[in-house]
Amino acid sequence: TLRVLPLPPPSRPDEPGTVIHALDRGWLLPLLRTRLPPAPLEYWTQNLLPLSSRLRISAKVLTKQLPAAAKNATVLSDQIWALLPAFCNRPTDLPKALPTLCPHLLKVLKEDPSLHSAVCSSLTVLLKRNTAALASAEVKDKSKGKAAKKAASA
Image (cartoon, rainbow, N blue to C red; front, side, top):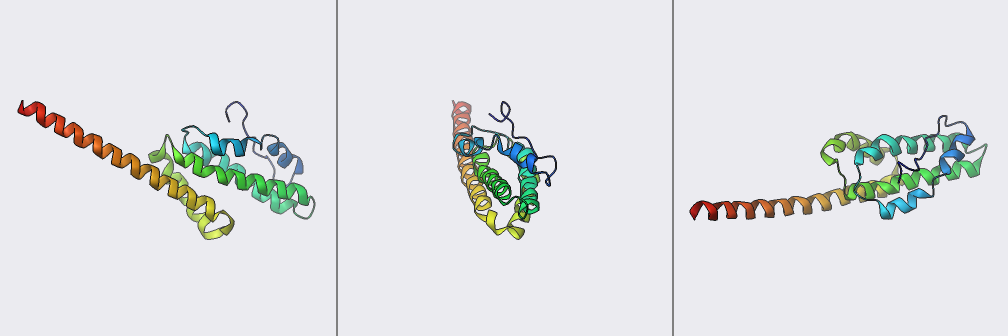
């Protein structure tokens, strides 16, 4: 979906038009949250995280000049963070993306309490999904081992 209708990052946080331009496709974010197929977590880290950061900067810059645009930028940034648990649900590149993602999550946990819920939800999803996947892999390995022993003894 984001390949067909990408979310363009605002080029300069102090230009209100760039925030409005980024909002043009902001309607996709709530849809993606519930309908995201298995996707690379690296996409969120490399594309959506920088967009969220720029939107938060834009919101701070625009608070006095254009409070409505500032509020819209904050909402869009929060929606981007709300997407993270969906990306963590079935990541296609977890071993590769996790070392890049973790420093950002730690920074947010230290500095931005408003995003704690999204970060904690994401970590919970990662732990639950990967614990289940690991348990499933262990069961498969055990059954393969038993089948190999039976074949060797026959």
